[in-house]
Length: 113
View: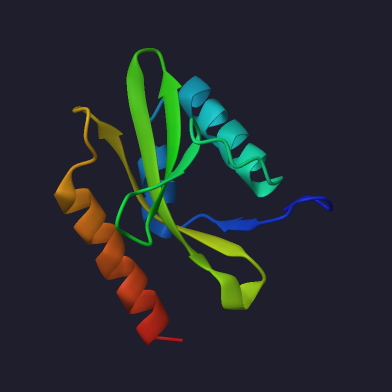
């Protein structure tokens, strides 16, 4: 996290494993977008709240693929954003199973606090 960042973004182990499977250029663009959000740029093209949930989506398009990292906020920890997992989106809509997975990780995170 840089000096001027508004948010701290915690990269989970699952996201780290996902990022190891993508090309170096795609990974660089994903981190570029994460850094924009950390700096406070809340552009819906790169970071969007999923309707009806407390889950947010980092959105990166690269080489015709839609890379997604799901995340949530822990505002008790100075605007901390915790990533849950990543996937390549293949349909227009975010799959419900991916949202449910992120919700389960969020629930587990807060139950352990």
